Amino acid sequence: MIERVNGTLHPIFAKLVATNHRNCCELTAAVTYAYNTAIHSSTTFTPFYLMFMRHPKTPIELLVEKPSAAAHEDQIDYVQQIAEQLRSAFTIVRSQLGHISASKEKI
Image (cartoon, rainbow, N blue to C red; front, side):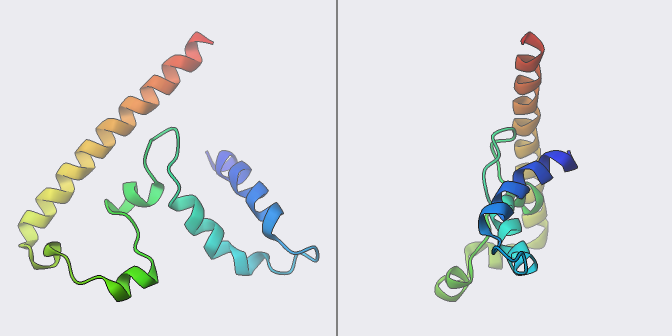
């Protein structure tokens, strides 16, 4: 799995890194953010969503948006809501990965 991630990130870095290869460290955060917020075909979700059960907010969104209704919810209700979202997301991911695995077996 690590090799697959590296195989995805390497071409991105190759396109962005300066010819002297000295700005690689400066790009790591942006490349990682792009990878974690991109929808992956194998899961149909972004890694960020599967980890935090929400979509990321950019700094401008944080400045412009007002607090959502979730900010005022009861903690128990919030935990139950997140647990249900996790179950739903992982059911979809499991199904997607099963379809991919089955289609590879046919080949």
